[in-house]
Length: 245
Image (tube, rainbow, N blue to C red; front, side, top):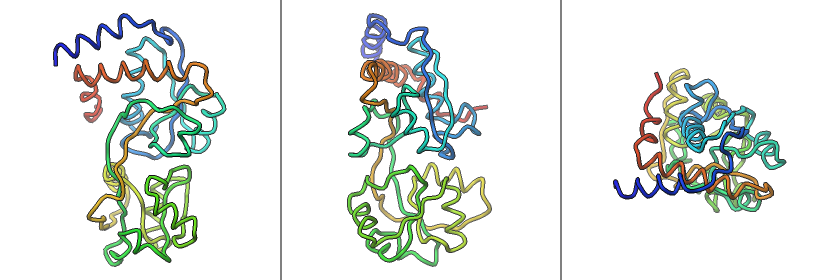
């Protein structure tokens, strides 16, 4: 472990840094706790990690907060150097380069206790799934296919908290989310009893992404990956995951 850490430190020291002393404009989205939300301390754990990694690189990162779709398009258009946190999809890979994974997790279907039959993609047939606008469903090929064919209806409000309110009032039948995000949101909402699918719908990883069209995107992500690996090796990554005081 010590040898690995020394190797990482040497690599970072010897590599000329693209962003040393430079501003790096970043953008993230709204309502994705505990990972990203401007109302959270430090903007959430993903924001704290990404900002710390760029600062480790000697950069001066700034983070703007926009609705997910607007931030995604603005980054694609070159208004921002990168955006986060995003899962990998075939559509995004055509336009964006990905960092190494920042976080690993799983996503599940959630429903009300009186409707457990919708906790599978097959059981969702002729029912309504809720997922915020700008989020993706194509991490599961069958789910994406069923939605495109009209076998499953899709509601896409601005935030996941709205999805759970729609579920509470019977306007949708299931919500697609991760345990970390769901638990954090439900702790802030009025009591809502839910059941979760026994098996995850998919395993996910969260990334920093930069546009393929960006002249320096590949180098930017290479340096970010070096800093991220160093943070995971020296323990600073884990410290950033602790509740901020």
